[in-house]
Image: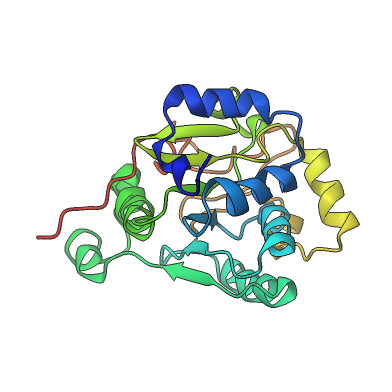
Length: 243
């Protein structure tokens, strides 16, 4: 397949690749995506959360200059921002791009940083979905850290997905929580400080709470709201029109 041919993957092609490469280790899947399928046209999107160090470490072993997109929603835990700086330095990542929501849109729609209380979906839309959609313009593919064990909505997650022409890659889809912990320990990777305080899944301050014994790892996200996803993976990413 010629370089950049991956941009024209159909849903059938994504399904075929998922089946073909299902036996490969995540690092090899990432290597082929960066070097063969989408050279110069792929980014890792990372929350710098509880398990983010695994993918970040794998990417750093392949190409320390590969683009890493980090969405700073402006309401993240200070620990997450500090962890980002620490992990970037530890892994010598050289192309981390911090994405933030549009200040004018925040001033118009969430001037008091309280939209999460009345309309959490819209809050996610303007703080995460729209900024990432804009940042991904020009990329043919992006790597996510989703796993099947995290939530019912992710139980059938494939390795590759076609999202209106852009390919989403989920190299850790089949990994278990214990496999992730083992990888972190074996490679001596720094842990997010909130993990020790029962935060196995870490998002924005208002919508993240500690997880109780016996709950799934994402139970602390949008607790009591019936909301399971922020929107990054539940709809096609389209940058807002310029007004």
